[in-house]
Length: 243
Image (cartoon, rainbow, N blue to C red; front, side):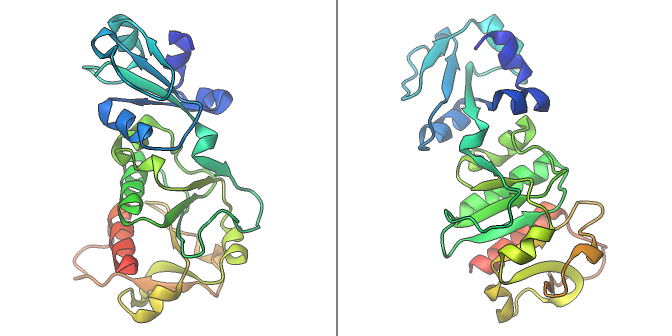
């Protein structure tokens, strides 16, 4: 791939057109090497020409690396990764036969902050056995800020994109959400749900769009502030449900 095409991978439109996204730095490349993914290409500068990989390795100049990198001091390591290896564009209402029977899901409705999504993916990877579903109009999970904040977790959490909110009730037998007036999340009943819905950072989830069968829970607090950061709320909920 030519250098100008690599640079274009910082744009969502071109990522969608090419079916590739870009990762950068030693930590992310080492996480990539641990996966079973195919179709990746590694780009290195002279200082990393001895990099050992099961993927094709291409040598580029420091100047070309600087032109491609989004960081001020590039580490000299890049890779292109196929987007379809990590995600599914899920428009059907049928359940995913590849999902483990014991796997739980987090559904994110129109999440916009890339740092929030990256942190959430990192949490899901830490506890394991969690899948992340993103609604339409959510932040692109292959945004470089998401990739960096996930610290490689994006390679270890099954992702589904474009999942409509109305599909959730038909796909899952038991769905819960967080609500200020819900029952405490520490109640034993919270452990019975296989999907937990979280809303947009500013607007939450449209209450009129949630079916009556969705169980409301809350994370008890002091009441001194109005709400929790989205990533913090997901972190606490996943910890509680993974205990």
